[in-house]
Length: 258
Image (cartoon, rainbow, N blue to C red; front, side, top):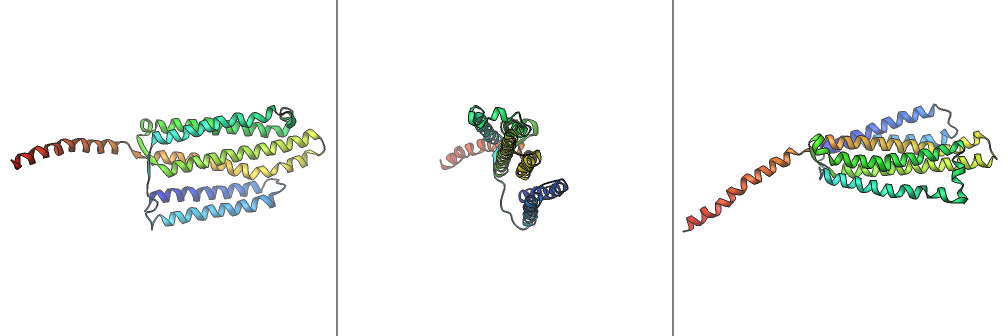
């Protein structure tokens, strides 16, 4: 059994099942455009479940893909660089606040403006602080968990899921907050229409948050399934013990030659 493929399949299938029941629960709420947004999302959850089951079954008959190791220090550098990129992106995203024509400082005082605040807060908290925290976690994984080598593809998948999730949820919430606050500020429509105009962000934001949660669990699995650093110590010990033996072989051979 390929435990690497089975782990991915199990995580994927579990994610699809949880997503399915969360969408069912969301359908019970008063949702203006539920008939438009929910069916495609449910179909996506079925596809995720099917893909997870397929990987689980494939793990019994194939050895591909095999484990590809990466040092925990390298994984720490990946997350540290991503944290720096997101930290540089954060002030860029706040730059529209100084553009007078957008009227963002005024729009933030309207009730839909809280979506904009939450979007920026999510980005800083998860995209910058969260990625930096993962960088530190991987840096001290050998000391905390005695794990030296991690699976490279799982680490890269965690980065992709985290980045896709945080950028999507921040964009969706910002767009909904900006549109809703603009409508309220203009005063031409009622609160019911404003709420309905913001509903387009519910499914993308919810799915994105769920993706971020999955990336967190994937990170924990990466650490717990990492290779023990004692294996490297043993390998080095074997090489060191073998070196003197190979060094003595030459004088012995030379003496026989004489």
